Image (cartoon, rainbow, N blue to C red; front, side):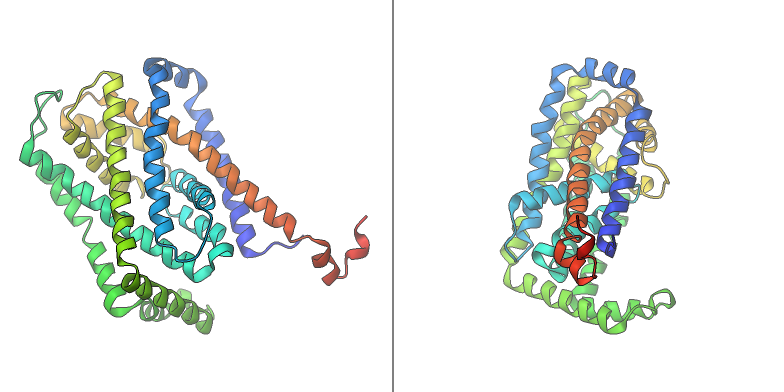
Length: 350
C-alpha cells in the first residue's frame, strides 16, 4: 500500500498526537483529576458552552475567509483537529498544516493556504488587540476592590510594553504582503540555500495563485474580512470570561477587566512556552509564577490552568478521532479496485 505525502503526514501527526494525549492523561493521573473536579463540581460542565462560543468564533471566522462552498460541519471538525495538534505541540503551528491537508481536497490547495494565512493573520491581530487592551484598561480603570490585591502600576506598564513589542511583526507582515506580495516574498525565500532544491516553477506557480487569492479577497470581500476579525475578538473575550468563571468557582473573585489582564499575561506566557520542548507543566508552572508576580495566590494559577486543560483534553480527543478517521478513510480509498487494476494487482483481490 503506497501512501502519498499528505496521508503520511496526517498519519504521523495522528500517531504523535495520540501518544501525547495518552501521556498527558497518564501524567495528570486519575486521582489528581478527580480531586480537582470534586473541588469544581458540576460547575465544570459550564466550561463546555463557554468554549462553544470560542469554537464558533474560530470556525465561522475561518469559513468567512473561504470563497468556495464547503460544509460548515467539515470546517468545525477540521478546525478542531488542527486545534488539537496546536494544543499538543509547544510551538502551536503543526495544526495549520493538518487543517490545510484535511480541507484542500474540498477547496483546493491555493484557497486552503490563502484562507489559513488570512485567518492566522487576523487571529494574531485580534489577539494582540486584547493583549494590549488588558493592561490599558487596568491602567485606566484599576485597581479594583474585588481583586485579592491591586496589581502594581509598574507591572501593568511592563505588560503593555511587552505586548506592543511582541506585536511589531504584524504590521511588518502586512506591509510585506500588501506592497511586496506573496509571490515576490516566495521568490526571495526560495533563494535561501536550504530551499533551492525545490522546483522553482512549482513554488512560484503556487505562490502566484496564493498571491492572487490574497489580493482578490482583500479587495472584493472586505466586509467578510472585518466580520471575521469581529468574531475572533468575541472568541478571545470568551477565553477571558472562562478565566474569570473558573477562578470565581474556585473561590477567587476578580474584576472582569482583571481577567483580560490575566489573558494578556497568559498570552505573553505562551510566547515563552513556544520555545520549550514540552508544554505541560511549563504552562502550569509559568501561570503560578505569573500569579505570584501579580500578588495573587499562585495555587489559583495552577488550578485555573489545570481545570481548563481538562476541558481542552476532551475536545483534543474529538479532534484526534476525526483526524484519524479522515486519515484511514483516505488510505482505504487509495486501494480501490480501479487503483489496484492500474497497478496490475486486480487479480490479487479475493
